Length: 116
View 1 (tube, one colour):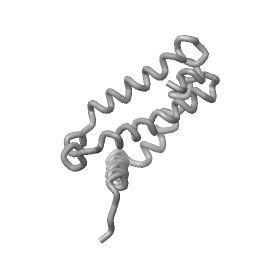
View 2 (spheres, one colour):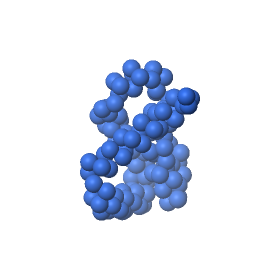
View 3 (cartoon, helix red, strand yellow):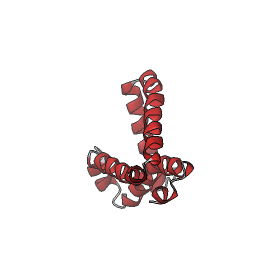
C-alpha cells in the first residue's frame, strides 16, 4: 500500500478536476480561448500600471476575483468532510493563482502593489 500525504492527495484531486473540466469544455476551446484571455488580462495590467491609482487597484481586483471564485467552490463541503485541515491548502492554491499577477506587476515596475 502506497502512503500518500494529504497535500499530494489534494493536488491529485485538483488535477483530476482540471482534467475533467478540460474534457467537458474541450481542449481545442481552451487552446483558442486561453491565449486571448491571457492577452486581455495582460493588456489590462499594462494599462492599470500606467495609472497611479490603477496599479493599486489591481491587487484589490485580484482579491475580489479570488473571493468570488472561493464562494462558488463546489468542493468546499467535500473538503470539509474529507480533509479537516484543508484551509492551508486553499491558501497555498490561492497564493499560487495570484503569483502571475504579482510577478507581472513587479515586472512592470509596480513593486508596492506586487508585494500586496
